[in-house]
Length: 124
Image (cartoon, rainbow, N blue to C red; front, side):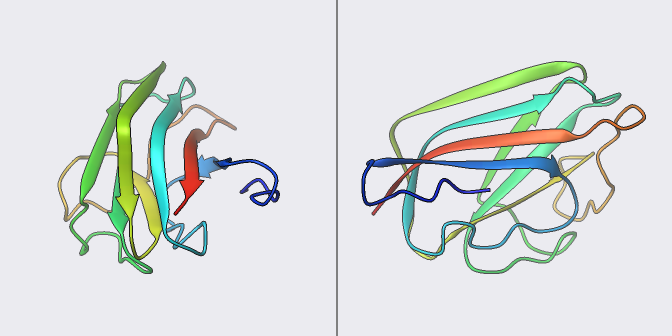
């Protein structure tokens, strides 16, 4: 989900309520700058890794992430990015259980649990 009022507010929220091995590609549809990332793995039974690229498409297990954000099981990780990370092509992301590029293992969560991701962005 991306907030739909970029013309009235400088900031937009990108929210994924079930991040996993399905790639969320070019979620903003335009170049964007990411100012913060929150990774909610409170339902997680294992550590997870949010993998992010500046691109319009990716293949889990093949595409090397430009940025990697870890989160321990049962925790919420917050990352503030002073000055922001600019995405010229597009904000694309997915989450896996292991940190390696070749990993395509789904995140490990309790029954009915999910990994949630929130980005604070501005349009560029």
